[in-house]
Length: 462
Ligand SMILES: *[C@@H]1O[C@H](CO)[C@@H](O)[C@H](O)[C@H]1NC(C)=O
Ligand SMILES: *[C@@H]1O[C@H](CO)[C@@H](O)[C@H](O)[C@H]1NC(C)=O
Ligand SMILES: *[C@@H]1O[C@H](CO)[C@@H](O)[C@H](O)[C@H]1NC(C)=O
Image 1 (cartoon, rainbow, N blue to C red):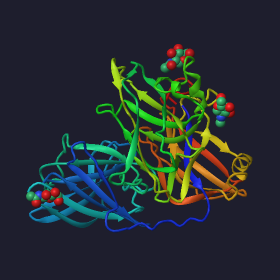
Image 2 (image 1 turned 30 degrees about the horizontal axis):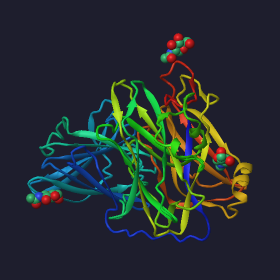
Image 3 (image 1 turned 180 degrees about the horizontal axis):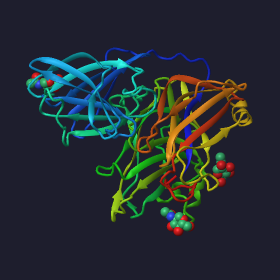
Image 4 (image 1 turned 90 degrees about the horizontal axis):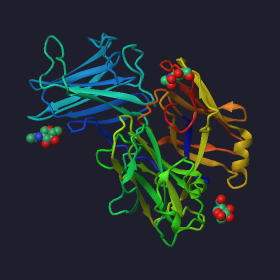
């Protein structure tokens, strides 16, 4: 159990942000496993507009929920009947009964259907002041979805049956939906048939060598390569930079990490350069930033740490998952780096049992940031992405930012943290961190259902 905020940062001089080409729906997600329920959305400071495309000619249901359950969720249901689109705002009570909301906050924009699909677009304010609507914020939200082959009749929507599900998304901070540029060069860091033990949690480590590229290149995108069928087994993957004086003999030796018998070479790999976690997608660096490889100070050896989650204690699993790194010789303006803040993984971090809302804080003090930045980066660093990380009891995380004893906007927060959905969050505006600033990472935990103390450590029960 631990929490850390990994901050992607690059070295600062003057920066011009590239303007986004905002035309139409910028974001999209497929909500079901079969690609029958697709959603696009766009937003501004005040409103969000959704377009749903669903393979049904009946009704389409869409909702926002704090925990993924239907109870107490905010729901909108619509469709096209006799050529006319319709839409109603509903909410579910604690016993999951659906009621029409007296305050109709969702506005129908357009709707159409053909013999196979219904397309429905609607908008609403981010904040509606209606207690039956869920406020839309930068936090994670569980989007719930459903559809039916019949339209909504006079007695209301029929039960959707099995055509339903949920997906965690950050509607206002969805990450880049960018893909690698066509034809971009890449290399893979991939495990080969790791025997995953039949135990709850395993950390598997292996050192890889970055391919020799002769001159400076930038890594511009990193994607997970998860073995088919192992989507729930591979819980997260971290990549650390190791000491460059390691040799060929340190490669190809996979071993459990944090284990008394692990190779000494593992202990030279301390700096996290990339993190991916379950539910997340690939990460593209901003268009003016890349992770440098190929120069004498760049990583030569990296340790890939894969966290396997095997709660049903399956036996005989062999895993060959890893990461794909895309790189280019066309250098970008800035080099990326990583700064970590939070509570270090240790037994000294403990959570009492039976707590509804227990707060723990990790301080990155003024002295610490001063010392670490002053010499090499006196004009500070700019943070472009944050990874908020906690384990099972984690409910909310916030990184507060102070300068000269004044508090600024939090660097990042998630009030509805989802353990199963952790990835780099690109910041909508880059944040300057100066020597002498101060960061406080706050984590809120719920241990209501635990009888014993929760101790810090590398198992994820925390
Ligand atoms: C029906 O609409 C869907 C969604 O817009 C589209 O993908 C599909 O091609 C359409 N089918 C026909 C027969 O036009
Ligand atoms: C890397 O290893 C070499 C040889 O063991 C050592 O001299 C050097 O200090 C190490 N570098 C770092 C950054 O730890
Ligand atoms: C909690 O602690 C008690 C006393 O040490 C122990 O007997 C019990 O097995 C523990 N329960 C769990 C779930 O670890």
